Length: 133
Image 1 (cartoon, rainbow, N blue to C red):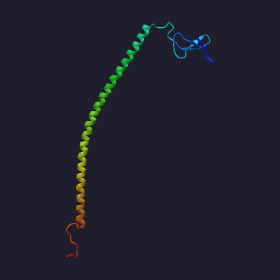
Image 2: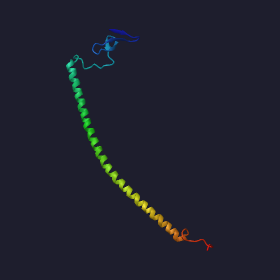
Image 3: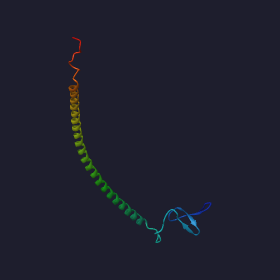
Image 4: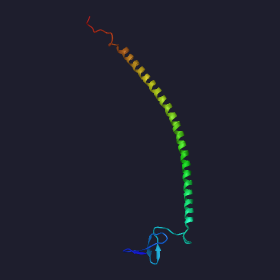
């Protein structure tokens, strides 16, 4: 079967079942590379065996990648556990330091007000105003 276009002539390729452009007397298949079939088309059984070999190779690659991913995940779990333990210890230390600093600031503030009271006298509590009695 030959189909005509405005600029090219196409013919139905028996091997691939596709329309291919005819260049002179020779057909050129632009879509499928068919080199390697000079000795003829492989049988259906040979095609199935080749497909099986391809699938087995892909399965082995997938298994290898999966084993590698499992090792990576196991390493990440170990790192997470170690960092969680370290984080808990750091949180406890942070809380202890926060309480220590709070206590130090409180004592320093009390000491500062005591020094001010000593230097200038404490006029807030017990002193009576002059002239009232």
